[in-house]
Amino acid sequence: MKPLKSPILNILAGLALAVIAGGCTSIESADVYNDQLQDKILTENYVEPGDHVIVSTNEGKYEFKVEEVTGQSISGTDEDDDPVSVEISDIVALDKKEFDATKTAGAVAGGVGWATLAWIALIALAVGWL
Image 1: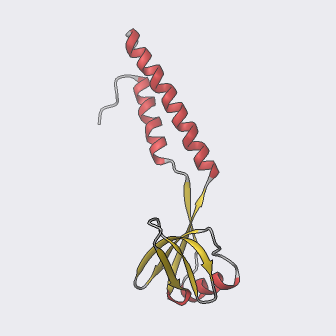
Image 2 (image 1 turned 90 degrees about the vertical axis):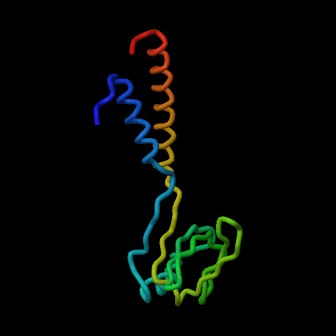
Image 3 (image 1 turned 45 degrees about the vertical axis):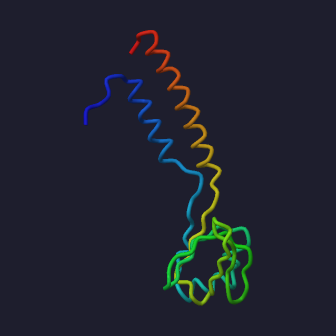
């Protein structure tokens, strides 16, 4: 692949890639499985109401916002507001999605920087500098 002819366009392309690669959430894995994971859920309050989780069982994966954790199950609603309930004894893996302020700030700063450079490039094109 040939590099772009203008250094400004190279910078813009790099910033666009950085913004696309950035994100606002991260996924935290429990790093334990099956019985250990089930014990962690029950004894360490690993999952609490308000958490956004991705739960894996032998039957499939469920992604939902937790509303209640009991001694037997984790329940909540998915993105379509449909109820979801998973027995803790059926869970083989669990990941939590968490908001990451650092990544969000980076994405916002990258977006502002990209927009600024885009305007500079447009002005440079308009006056014939590129």
